[in-house]
Structure formats: structure tokens, C-alpha cells
Image (tube, rainbow, N blue to C red; front, top):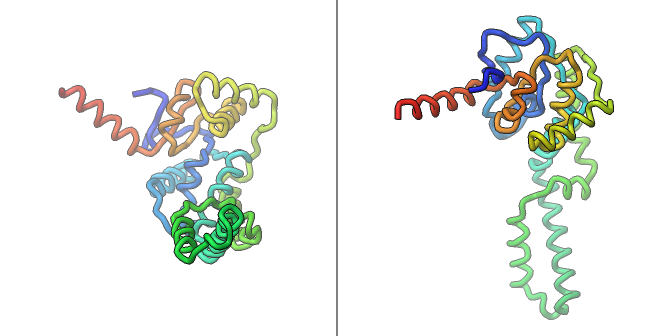
Length: 238
């Protein structure tokens, strides 16, 4: 197991730490009023409490904030049943019109219309489609976004990071190439590396962030390392 990957339960905490998108999404689950459950809400809440109690400095970047708010918007749009039903109804009518143009009016039977409706009812909803149909949906979600923003601002005391430098872009591109990181993760890690005051990153994205443990210490929920220890122990006994 890497010496540079630590559990949230590790006795020693870094003086400064960047909170990753996955960490914040888990931390703010209850704040956002999600109908689903969070795997790591308890882990993130307790770790945050430790950081506060021990007077450690927490940071988030604008890139991370943007990603968090976008994810919240996506999740909350999927809960807008009335708008989803409206979109499906409009989509059914669009499909019917296409069928009329393609096959002729006489071929659009009641049975065929029902099949179109059944097919569209099974669609996986793309939040972007709902937003394009009804941009005003954001006014329903904005109070949650504002709540999350204020909470994070209070948590980090609005500490600022350098985020737009050439060095960060260069570092991010290196990470995409050398560590196979997706651009969003690469920019988050590059921001931490270029801002020298950041000593570590807190994340719930163990699978991807473990690839950069040689560049910066990574703190993750203990469950990840516990399962890793269990696998190592099993191999040893065999």
C-alpha cells in the first residue's frame, strides 16, 4: 500500500488540504436535499470536523465549485417530475410528426402512437434537454446552489488559489498524458501542485486519484484502504 495514501482516520492531518469535487458532493448531500443516499457522507463530515477542530486550512478551487454546482443541477433536474413529463409529451409529439413526414399520415395509427409513447417513457432523461426546454428550472434549484456556496465559503474562509496560470495548464496536460487523468481531474490536481501551500487532497475518488499519490498525499475514506488491507491479508494467508 502506498505510503502517500492516507485514511481520513489517520492521526496526522496536513496543515492545508484541497477538497475535491467528490468529497464536497458527499459532504453536502444532506444540505442539497438529495433523495438518494451518500456512501461517504459520514466519513466526509467527521473528517471535516477534525480539520476544523485542529484548525487546518481547507481550500476549494473555482473549477471544483463549478463542477459541484453542475452536478447538483443535474441531480436536481432529474427530480423535476412535472418538467420531465412535459418533455416526454413534447418528444412524443415530435416523434409522431417525424413519422407522419417519413411514412405518411395514414401510417400513424393509434397503436403506433402508443408504441412511440412507450419507447420515450423508457428514455434515460438528459438534464440538458430539460434545461433547454425550461431554463427557468434553475430558479427552483438556485436556493440549494446558494446554500452550498455559502457553506463552502464559510468552510474555506474564502481562501483563494492561483487557477489561471500557464503553469497549471502545462501541469494538467502533463497529467493527462503521464497519469491518464481526465481533464477535470488533471486540472484539480495541477491546481494543488502549482499552489505550493496545498499539502494534500481529500477525495472519495480513490480509483482515479491513487494514480497521483507519488506527486501529492491523498486522503480517502477508510473503507477504501480497509478493503485494500483485506485483499492484501487474503493474498498473504494464501
